[in-house]
Every structure is written in C-alpha cells, then in structure tokens.
Length: 568
Image (cartoon, rainbow, N blue to C red; front, side, top):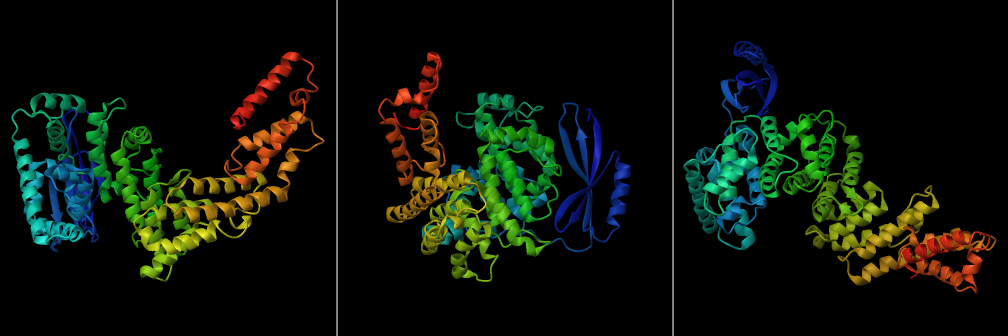
C-alpha cells in the first residue's frame, strides 16, 4: 500500500479468539459489515481494526470499534504449569527458556493482547498492564514459586518474595529504558541501523536490551499475529550480522511459541497430526504448504532456518511439537479409527538417519502419547507404551533408535526394564525376517542389518554387557544370512576372471552393506587377503589387457580401491 492509505479489518470473537472475518477499504463499509456479522448469533463479539500505512512505510493498527454480547467476558486466568526454570539472577528472567515459561503461563492473556513475551518484558506499559490485571500476576507468581520451591527444597513463601523482588527490578529497568533520552525509533526496516545507533548511546552491555525495547515499541502497534510476523520478517536479511539476527531470532522464537500465532501461520489443518507435521516442515526450513497463511514470510525464513542461523526459532518449534505430542488431545479428532496410523506418521516424521528430531525428549513424548492409544494408564501404561511405540511404527531401525533415545531420557530411568526387554525383542532375538521385510532385495536387507549394527555399536547409553549381547546376535544373523545366500561365493566365483572377483569382493568390503567390526566383514576380508596372496597376483590381475598404459591404470584404480576399503 502507498503512504497515507488505510484499510479496515473486521474480526469476530469465536471461543475466546479474535479471528479475521473480512476487510473493507472504507470505515463506513467496514462498520456496515461488522453490524451484519454481529447480527449472527455465533459471534460473541465484533471489532474493527484500522490499518494505516504512513508515508515512511510503517503500518499502524488501531481498534476503532468493539462490540460484545451482553454476557460477561470471563476473567483471564493463568495456565497451570508443572515446571519452570529456576532464575537466580535478574538476567536469568530474560533467557529463552524463561520467556517460553511466560508464554505457557500467560497463554490466555497473550492471546487477548497479541503480545509476545519479549514485548511483555521489554515494554514498560505492557509489563505494568499485566501486573494490574485482576489477580493474574499474583496467581502466576504463586504457581512459579510453588513449582520452583518444590524442586529446590525451599519454602514457597521465600521463593515468592524473591520472585517479586526480581520482577520489581525488571519493571524498573523497563521504566528507565522507556524514559531513556533520545532512544531511536525503528525507521523502516533498518534494524541493523537501529542496533548500531543504540550501541553508541547506551552504556556498555546495554545495547541488546535497549534495542529490544525499541523493537517492542514498534511491535506492540501490530494487533494481529500475521501482522507482527510480517513486520519481524521484514527486518531480516540473509546477510545480517549474527548479533542483530540473534535478537530477532529470540523474538521469532517467542512468536512461534504462542499457540494461536502458530495456528494463524499454519492455516487450517485437518487434525493435530497434520499440524505437527507442518510445524516439523517449518523446523526443517521447508517451503510452506499452500494453505499456510504466511507463505511469503516463511519463504524468507526457510533458508535461515535450514542454514542453522535461527536456532532459537527451531528450538521453539520442536518444543511446541513435543509438548503437543505428549498431550491427550487426539491426533485424528474427526476419525478416531485413524489415531494409530496418524501416530505412526508423526513418529516416522520425527525419525532421521542420525536419530529422532528432538532426541531423548522426542522419545519420551512418543511414549507418553502411546499411553493414549491403549486402555492401560498410569505407570503400568507407560511400561506397556514402550513396546507399543515400536509395534505401532513397525520399523526395526526406528525401534532401535527410539529405544536408545528413550534410555537417555529422564523417563528412561523409570522404564529401564521394559526398554531392555523391548530391545531384546526388537534386535536381540529372533531371525532376520522379524527385522527386515521378507520381500526386500538382498542388498537392502544387508544394509538394514548393518545400520542396526552400526547404530547400536555407536551408542553409549546401554551397559557394555547388554550392548555386546545385542551386537553378538546381529553379527550371528548377518553371518548366517551371508552364508545362507552364498553372497561371498557368488562374488568370488572361480570361473570369473581374477580381476572381476577381486574387485567385487573389495567393493563389497568397502560398501555400506557390512559392519566394519563384524565377524562377517572379517570373513569377506579374509577372502580378499587370500586372493592378494596368490603368487604373481598383479600379473594375473591384468591378464587380457594388452595396452601397458591400460594395465597400469587398472592397477592404479585397484590399489585406490584397496586403500578405500582399508587394506592399506
């Protein structure tokens, strides 16, 4: 839009959330549309937001009309939490994990005021307003104090007083920053320029805080989540210095930590399972789906996310996935019969060659989710869920990775017996057909058994005796399979030229189809060594090649292959 142009957004209140219904170019037509929408009984409230584009390109948002039903709007309350990071210094309250706790604790309030935790703690007016909300702030302090005191073995009253003292200092810091003389405003999209200007003005070590104060001053004007995201993304450049990008990364992490903000970005999702997969797409920096409400913004963020330059944002996204995964909310609400199938899809979506996205926390979340797929609950249900996850997914490599990651989790200590038993059922007993589909080609079967072996050999969470027992079983399976299929004999066919036999065997040893430390790999190497020790091996190797230059080239390539396979 050009400078001096306005449009009007009409929003309706549904189940406590303001959702955009329509846009109009003039206030008169916006009011008429709002009146018509409010005449429908399923609207709890209606409001009009004026978007005004100034000459400098900055868009301001102002609520110019609000109308509610005659019912009393429920008082906003905190969301009970069971964990909170222990903050010993005032600076600890500004850390990402502390802001994430603010996000969860004040979720209902945040949804109403369209403010991220970064804005709440860096904007003096917003901070005072939340403290003055009826009963909200004392309830929050009481809850956090109780959780932290329980974990630290302290008295809740003492911890509560300490939190109040810290909040007083945080509030005073925001007040002094608000009154700081000549604090620059964010002009256009020049965030780096803002940071540089502030760095020259404020005392050493205060530039980050005051820059976030100036940014929050700008962001509070945007009264919709998509408007706020658009503003943030507009401040980011691919070649941005790490220090200023880190500040924006923190605010973006707060943004994506707000449930309703993330929902607005993702757009309509058929079920929770689809939503979790869509969030994982964002986490990996993939292009947004067609129904995403912020495709252009995500397209700008995706390369930075994939390139590892927005780590706090990634952490916020995976935290959201795992917290939702561990809840009892159905993954397939409209079709309960597909709950297990959707669970499997989400579990495999978390699976990567190097482990689970989210590591041990993901394994714990999958276990807690699996409890809701079965009748048994409580501690017995958790024990049953360990095998339930493996059975539901039906992939031996996934099962092994999941069980190893679960062993490394806090929950794993409670389930060590069931983990060990499930590991034995998954990779420590039975035959190859229980680990690999029968219809797979021989090479794929070997590769899968090798992946299982190498994954198990590389881990450090199992006791050595258990790890060696499982590795021994896999080694015996591999040996029996290789011998039963006559693989080495086929490669080392005496009727074939020596050059072909040696090359095939060495490629077999150098490939990814055998574990390097297994007995069967030693067997294959032994056949190679036997060939190499034959009298006049190199003479026989180049038999049939008349050109001396080609002979030398053939030998050179062979020795390179030998070195790659570890024979030299």
